[in-house]
Length: 264
Image (cartoon, rainbow, N blue to C red):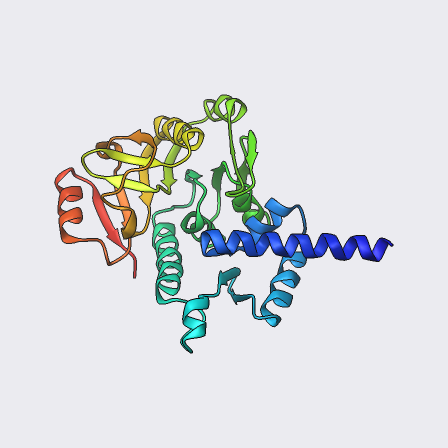
């Protein structure tokens, strides 16, 4: 009976993983581990078993959903846009990490590019990282020279982020050198935005306590607006994005005095 219940729980968890992949296209082990309340080892085993069944494609640190339309036509199981999106987010995170110096106090927002940024900070000493997402502290926990602060708040399983009144109260106690902010919309005229109003409000507070705001986002987010306004583009000092940013968007950003860094 116990084995039967465990099997049902495992099956339910793996179905949830597939639902997340079907919706988002990709997922990392750390976020899945936190969201589903199990160890990273358990998630890796789940991904391995699901890959054996042909239900997903494993990647370094996570998984991609299968492009069933391409599979039916005999093409690659992972669509070109999926591959490109993964490469872009990884390269953006690596590029953003070069802006972090030893002795800095930084805030790392939620998002895949932000997670990749955190993964490239382990060599730094005397670094303080504040993050409103649980996967970043989990990733950095093994580095003794990095001081980690988690403000707390209301947990959102999809992004493994923390928001709400408690998070706001705690963040107001700090001042930071740099904020690395992942956004869902960046319209040069209308400003930067996110789809979740609570996360957008927290982003506003993060900007107010940071000397420098660095937006890390892929080129597909430019000239788009989401539900919740964060701030005007003029509040952003640097943008780290991929090579597919249009010349028009880049020119508009640079005219505002925003430094644009292109990830390799």
